[in-house]
Amino acid sequence: MLANRLGKIPKFAILMYHDVYLPYIPDLLSEYMHPSFRLPQKKFLEQMLFLKEQRYQIVVLNELVNMLVCDELNKKTVVITFDDGLSSNYNVVFPILKEFGFKANFFITVNKIGSVDYMNLEEIKELSRAGMGVYSHTLNHHLMSELQMIDMEKEISLSKKILEEELQKKVDFISFPDGSYNSKALGLVKNASYIGACNSDTGYFNLKTDKFRIPRITVKSNYDLTEFKKIVTGDSLFVMKLKGEFLIKRIIEKIIGKKLYKIIFIFFLKRSLENK
Ligand SMILES: [Zn+2]
Image (tube, rainbow, N blue to C red):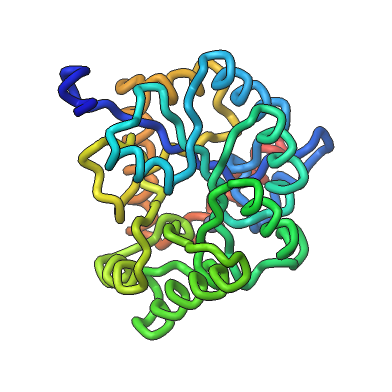
């Protein structure tokens, strides 16, 4: 086992991205996307260059799970994920991935396919044909914890079925919108024959990680390259700090609700920008 050879359980970063924008002034205050989830192309390029130069092995989630079974994971493995299925994933991210010979995982919000700012079906199919992981991000991007069982079931299983029919490929993973899930959602994910689920909890993936509770590390737009290096090289102190920040956010969200938290965040962000 890899764990025995190294003397301790190795950990791998599963990076979470959403949007990467070209060098034009983006609408950072857009209500649909948290500004910290929108990276300038230059920053993303820099990060991919670092992974290339350091010879990281970049894999899709299906490969990660197979490698675990076959004990083929090496210490320098990184997984890149994109949530939502935004147009920039195809227009900006895909060309960069091709240039570096990297594969990433795209979680698609099925009922948004082809709408403004989202990839269309042909683009998603092209990603899939190029060997990218194309998986479900539910039908409508609702918070699972706020849904009735019947609606939750539809979001989880129908999104899988539609994608599988369109792509003619198994859709083995799901990521929960806004990282919202509960034990009912996990049960439905297992019933629908997914083999794993990603959430937005902060942490590394290791050989003991529950495949239905895969944590990720958000690459935020304000991180510099040094911070990115800390994430992928497994700097536990830095990730502990991120975990702390994430927990505080979750506690506040629990007290006042996710929607209100977001409204207050955007309100203060707008005010701080107006005062500059
Ligand atoms: Zn999302």
